[in-house]
Figure: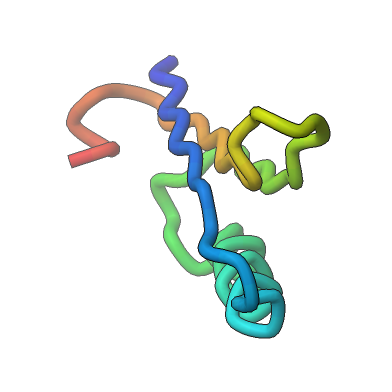
Length: 64
């Protein structure tokens, strides 16, 4: 299994776009057959990233 993690920091004043983006990421599960698991979370804390995508694939080839 390959776990792929991506984190983002968003610009201030882009809350609407952030929600659209994160909703779109959540919608990938079930659309991409190679995607075994997909988790999208907002991060808490002042100096953390704002959002994270954790996705699992069966093998590296499926990720590419």
